[in-house]
Length: 425
Image (tube, rainbow, N blue to C red; front, side, top):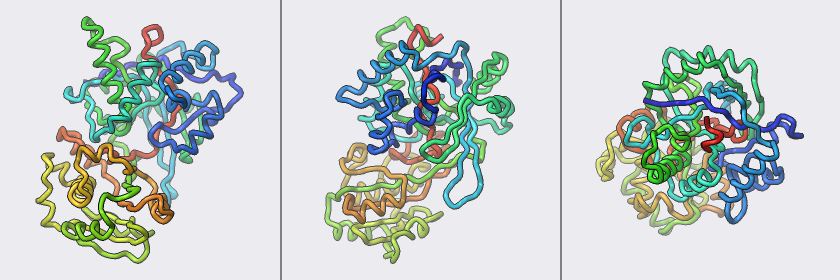
């Protein structure tokens, strides 16, 4: 099913007077304003392509890409390859070092209805539009999305392990993760990757907006070229693929933060009690602990007061969204339906672009924003399990937006791929 191709990647000229650490950047959806301003100071940092500054970001990125290629700041590798990418990391409170093993390649941007690439989240329209504009102008993929294949026999791992002993780059990124990149040029080995993936469905773990951008760009190009064969460069997308059978896949929770509420705090608590058992918690920093491994339980931090809210079992039958049972059972579906829609009065469609609603990975940041008065309400949730992601994907439905945070994030700057006809083949 999944058609993948090796890449003739663009990489930074090794003669530049910068280490690779100085040229990499976080993904567009996690880089903070403060980080952006610091990274923009280096005129060669990858952020100038992935999150370009200025009033016309897409045009700025196009001009930057053209200049970097002409000036030899970016050089294209002479041979196509599969780029092996390992990430070594630790989780807070654990001494174990994990290693997430994967590889980057081009993959055909299949339409959702083809059921080759399976999504699990809704997207936010404005973010998709940004990605389409960048792709149209630059004809480059500046960061790989993250997909999951399934290989319980770990067939490809021996080739990746051998390749990673001769790294192109080693870097410690903003997450404290050690990132290592290498490349496989051997055509016979590359064919093993192609053959393994051709019968696979791919779960899109991270990068729904970038992938949706590729889909919409592909549709536009197909309309302009009705005689297209399906093999043209515009059909392909850059993806980082990892094995779902590995135990080094980690999904962290994404909390919800409201700058202000559409109803009074008193009305919020009163309505919350219609559906939830609400318990006061003395110490706010215990909120994430008191909900751990408890279904449909959330931490609520409202204007300096902490509560545990757990859905009343009989209330779950009231969940009226027309979604499969696999989606109804998710904690985040319960949160978005009962708290956002029923309690706060924000419809499912409004939630996708609701002003003042943000998605925050850091529990401490949530508490800090409420304590400082920058936010009125924080909703603390548990992480989504990999088994839940798989069940939802295969049901054909999607989760609420920003449901998962696969950790660690892929970094920008190791590899760029082109879908320009003169550079693709």
